[in-house]
Image 1 (cartoon, rainbow, N blue to C red):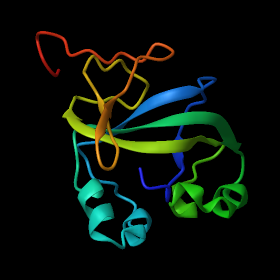
Image 2 (image 1 turned 30 degrees about the vertical axis):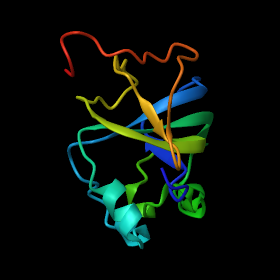
Image 3 (image 1 turned 180 degrees about the horizontal axis):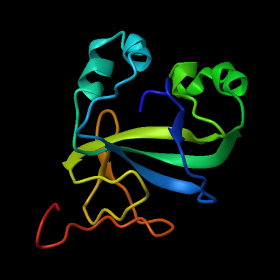
Length: 145
């Protein structure tokens, strides 16, 4: 959410583009490399958020890594070459990341729907994120799943 890790690595490809909510897993990142990028209290506060929506960013492309060398050369995913698994991995490249008011929500390793009201954090005020391209932003009566 702070522009350091702009590529999220996955084992599957996507053709999706546009605004995507960013979800922080309940499980911490096992690779120690991304943790070396945390250098300020603001980054640590964001890194400490788990099990919910933490931001929104624009997915602009899906990169295909077909070799360990190509994967290692792209430092935007902030992980080590040891994470590469043949025959390929995919990198979802994001731009225009913005933090949002944290919303606890169960996640998934694939895309999933979040039916919650999400507020983008702007300084000095907050602005409600309006629905765009299928992004659901109203809180259901049953609450978080």
